[in-house]
Amino acid sequence: MHISSTVTGELLDHLTCWDALSSALPVGTVSGAPKVKAMELIDKLEVTRRGPYSGGFGWISFAGEMDIALSLRTMVFLTGTRFDTMYLYKDDTKRKEWVAYLQAGAGIVADSVPDDEQQECENKAAGLARAIDLAESAFCQ
Image 1 (cartoon, one colour):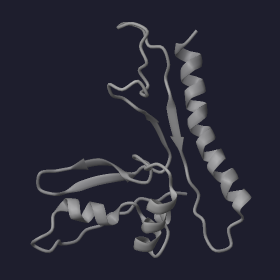
Image 2 (spheres, one colour; image 1 turned 45 degrees about the horizontal axis):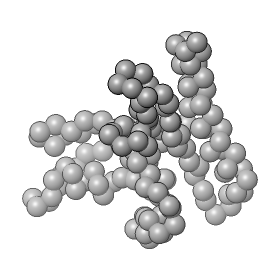
Image 3 (cartoon, one colour; image 1 turned 120 degrees about the vertical axis):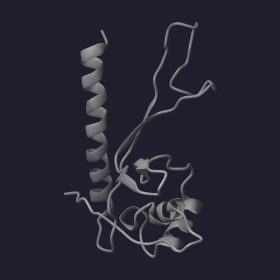
């Protein structure tokens, strides 16, 4: 079960809301502990960057107030002008192919069973895949 927390505080004069946000994300339950060492290992071992997964989604006001939700299960459709995006065109009016990247994780601790953690990730990603199935059945023929 996920929780909601309200965090308040005061920043040192030389820091901004962006400093607070970048030090908080990714949260320790996603990165591992100790956080700095865990992030170094993640940067070294993971082949590609995580994108929005384990980051945050929300808003930040001009006064530095923010409301951020964690991105723990994500579905990403890449966009852009390159040919490896979700929009691969035969011509200017017809979409040829969509590529969805599904991301989910598990909370690995000292007594975790690797196969169980893998299954947890697959179960979480299955919910995202089911959303694609439902959308296709409703809108595609």
